[in-house]
Length: 273
Picture 1 (spheres, rainbow, N blue to C red):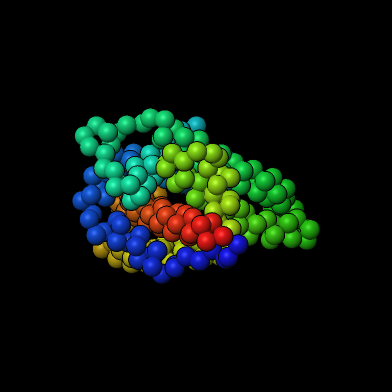
Picture 2 (picture 1 turned 90 degrees about the vertical axis):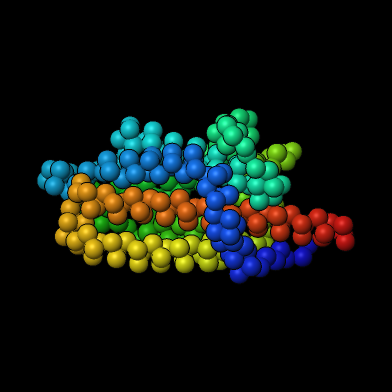
């Protein structure tokens, strides 16, 4: 089989065109899920305790129940947007009226596939990182072997994430078979280019966000913006959360276009073979 080739620059440009060339169309499809995601992530961020609220050497112990529920809401919102945005970019389907709010079998399947792919990557990484993390939090010196495990686990986790990253898009297309398995085979010899694609798409938006938030911080007051719980900090967090959804939209668009191109090349290779 020939090496899968995707034009990283062309797909990155295509993702920006997909979102910004008809921004009204993007908002028409994204608005309910954009609202849910932004509110959920904003809530998670605002519920993080300030350092002054932590007593002594107390360390924040992960997400609270409310933060966990809000994180699940964000996951569902992103999956619903992905399902509808995929149908638009691939098939030209535009949800009309209340259809944009519909949560049906397709959306449920995308949520399950996204969650399942996340578990396949997250559980092994979590187990590998647990022991060194516990040693570090306890103040003990971390031996060389766990550090080597971490050093090897992180790039391996990124590799597996990229291999499975197209599965939600494939699930949204109602294709027969296992979307996770299909993503694994579709991304054969394309992992490095997919990684380059994500970086190429995210960096411009990240720098725009950085410049905007830094400029707003200067306008609102640097000291006030650094105060936990202040209105100034709330504005900056809200802007960052908005840009987070926008960057995810660009990444999702790039993945959708990558699926379309890789699928076309796969069909051409099979027909030629």
